[in-house]
Image (spheres, rainbow, N blue to C red):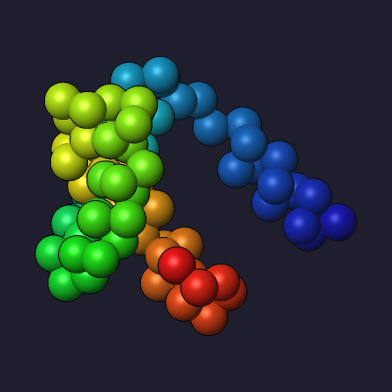
Length: 85
């Protein structure tokens, strides 16, 4: 019963959409920072994604590859153990 009461108390808080967006943006900052660091330390992933984007988006393949590497860095940390890239 304690857990249900605690859950109801947490879920009864009122949040504004702006507050939720601000929280999400503050939580995204460390993720993006770590992704940029990972992209600079592991440029082979940027090159890999850039080659894939070059057929679809020739003008911005380098930015798309960099952005994809930054966004997917948690998965790419374990990519070598999961499959050969």
